[in-house]
Image (cartoon, rainbow, N blue to C red; front, side, top):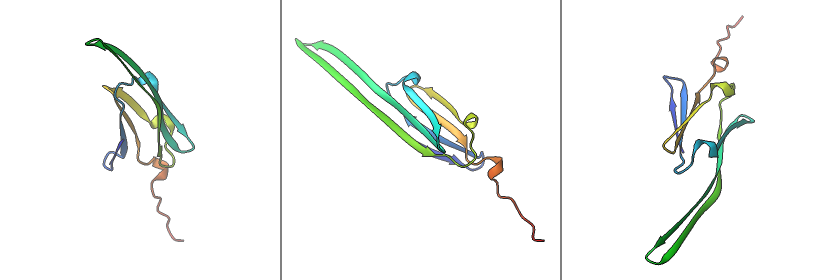
Length: 105
């Protein structure tokens, strides 16, 4: 996973390389202030070469959790997947999180 913060755009971008996975095999959830990306790989290939039968299997689950800034709403999170690369973007901070100046009475 690569995580990039763009202060000028107030945007955080998380990039996940998930080769061989389609977007219907990947889950993205927000739970208790965390962005959770998870999925399951289940792949099997059979080949016959030079009189030998070759069977390969690759299975397993994965999960990655990122703490979200306070105030980020689930509708502010955007995700897209292309060529095995999942890109998730969300605001670095919400307008309600901006520092508020308090005048002294």
